[in-house]
Image (cartoon, rainbow, N blue to C red; front, side, top):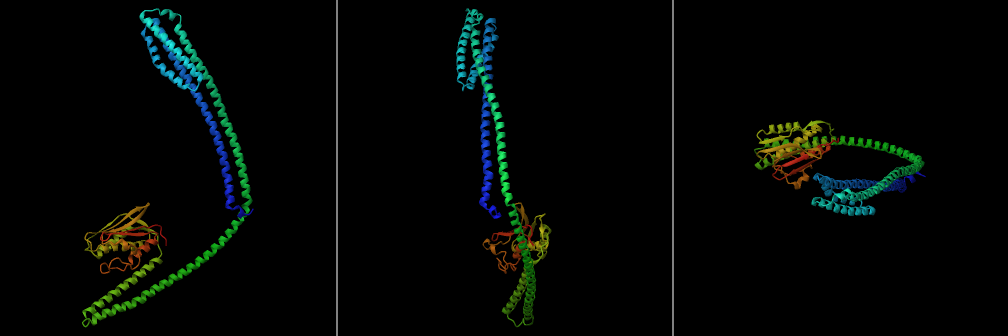
Length: 477
């Protein structure tokens, strides 16, 4: 049989089905047999316990009858009323004791017949006892009946009925005990025999399955070797292709860096010329240029300056993707305090409060994470510039057991309908005349956060402040 035939899913399922279903069926049969046998054993044990209870209750009834008979006789012979105490006590307890005995033998017609006779004899004895007590108290002739033992004969009849009831229950208890012993032996020996049969069958099936498996082992092993050889060849080709792509990517990065430098150098030269000649015109020909011409030249110089800043930001953004990412412990709280001090020194008159949570620590590239805080805190500083009592916070929240760092301010905020534009280069949600900037900062922040394996989101309300939340997971260079 070939390896491919052995690997047929339908064949494997049939093999598995035989290996599982047959032991399960045999185990279920064994469990059913043991359950039935144990049930029989429990029933026999329950019958034995019931017989023991009948015997105990019969002894109790017998003792109550004796107490009643001896109490009556002692009172009649001595006249001492103390003998009536056991007589009365036994009379009060007898009905309940007899009722319990009846409930215990309710399933035996013979025993119920004996109890019926016992009730009749007891009623006869009770009538005799009442008559003797009346005769004693009225001064009648009660002595002859006591001396002749008439009351004792009646009581002996009841005792014989109880003795017969107890004797039958003992026989029944012996029978139930013998039955319970036989059932116990049957459970033990039958279960052991069934387990031996089941073990032998399972051993035979296991050996048969092993034989089937061993027949296909060599072909499977040969196929696995061929696949391993093919895999090693494929890995070698893949490593060669990866090395080639790495060389191509390295060359492309060098070309991109060279292009970025060329763009920076070639664009800056004409921009410097535009700015320089505009300044020269203002200084040399300023008196002959109209006020409108002055305004045009100032706008020209501002546009050149803005273009230079855009070039710097673009170069900085492109370098972030190529810079090597270092892993080291970073104290975000200390970095944030340093950035906040720098912002305050730039505008010492600002009414702004920084609330930076202590102990915010992580792992990452300290240089790049400082850029993140400079942009986020700088944006918060910028967009609270028109707010009296401005407040800027840095703190951490817990999300699924991981920290999520938050920068919150109470500045001008923005409309969440345009939030998708926040992290795109050159996208701005405010006019340059209101708040300066090139729109590169948040794109830079997002790229750094992504390189650290995290993510960043923003939440804001127009004129109600903004909150930026970011995570820092395991970094990916």
